[in-house]
Length: 449
Image (cartoon, rainbow, N blue to C red; front, side, top):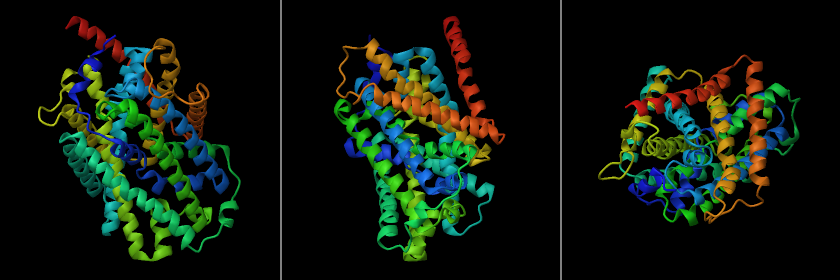
């Protein structure tokens, strides 16, 4: 059956190659998390071996999910990514709810958080006070500039990601190599640690998952990848291996350079502290600049990839049709990009607590990913004869491991946050469920229009 997305997919130009796609998945996923979250995790889990175990476990879970997404992307290489998978597997209602969350909740929250972190790092680098007004103005300016860059074309957005991804990968490599080759740390730091409480462990999962979040967004630009049936699997697999290697390497470097008790005190300055100790204040400042570039690249990647969900929904008649418009000259979903930017700017203006928002975001986002990866099982039955240039290895065990691991992780986060009186994950899930009656109302309005 030909869907509206299929018939219209040619409106977006296929201009993203292998290097651009890898840069996007690495650039979207590696943002400020690996530079900001490790001290938070150390405060919740004061045991280096358990910390490394968390990073390895969710790295493996993410790779299993990414391999399933590689199959889905090669089967359905259309704009919208997860939205398309959900629609084919479960129908319009599930796809609408996912798109509803992406357009109104998760993407604006992620963009607002990244823009805010970028602003804080910039003010820190310049030695200026981080007043709420200055943070908000810089964040809003960054969103506007990157939105304009992505309206000019996916090639421009991908080029920005390639440059910023090179910088962030180089920065992480410098931290890892610098720590072990030039640093005066101790391997004993990695084996020293205190007692881990269940509540702290559960809450730490949110920080680890937040840092891994983002890899799914690359599926949303499948409609603009050259030869997606051949390249999508390479983009996802290579990108995820790079991400997991850098994350584990960076945590080993941090722990090698300082005991976990000192790591807790570093907050967002941990990478700068490590490089300052290794090579002096000037190199520490350069690393902070690289961190800003990392966050800037993740912000750009989110603005490039995620508005494609609203674009695909509009083409399917599940949301206002103007969001499905492409620019006559640049062939980009400019209306969806602009709406996404406006909602993100509103979020910047109301953003209050970074950790609460990221926890809220992670629970909703990864709950949706459980259904997305589960679509592999459904579509193997619904579309058994459809060509699949890439098939998930060790099927069904790999996608099943992702689903079970993520169910355990998300459940632990919700339980851990409730223990400390934070009900924001519950609110997020309630908003997600509210999408179903909204979809029903939308259908009724369309019938009477």
